[in-house]
Length: 257
Image (cartoon, rainbow, N blue to C red; front, top):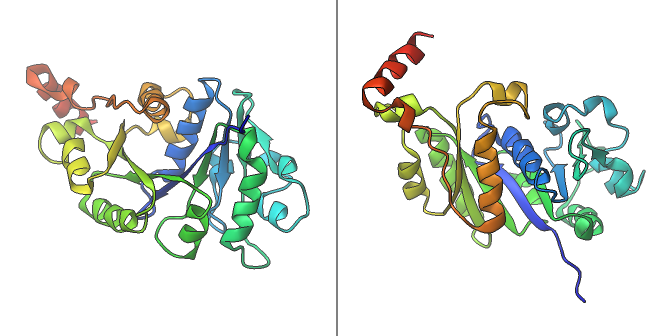
């Protein structure tokens, strides 16, 4: 019987500041809540913060670079999540003593492949050497974009570098009030521009960055995880509560807060 291999998915973006790491972390949590075995791997060497986002920075003993440089086994660099027993984090480091190449990354991932259902790889923004190193060990890609023309344009450039990948699009930080009033690009417009598989929509919510598990839009990430697992496309509705007479009142109130 052949081994079941993990789905290896790189989470990337055209530019920094779009919430890529937060999306990666929340998606991993949502998948783990389905009793799936999930590894979050930080390959943003130098600008890594996945351990901070996951609140495990005080538990880091070994990291990804230690594994590559054979100071520890891969299992020793894994940190188990306190709340979800099937969720693990492999942190990165702020500096590497030598250049880490794509082959080294592939070897680490290959040693972990059959232990997980999903390996989500937090990728550096942009399309330089760090990007190419991260995508080398993945089969699929999630491109995170915000509803701003500059983000959409940079995401399109990134997608051009992912020609051999199954590319899924996540639109993050959507403000339903601005979309309803025509002041922000809608999810439909962005999906049409980028022309790849829509995976989901995440509303703008400061609570996402403050608490990964208790924010009111947890449902949006649960929908994202279900879409990734089943191939469905259930989109979180960011706009409906801002339409109609009462919706217009909500828009005005939100502007004044």
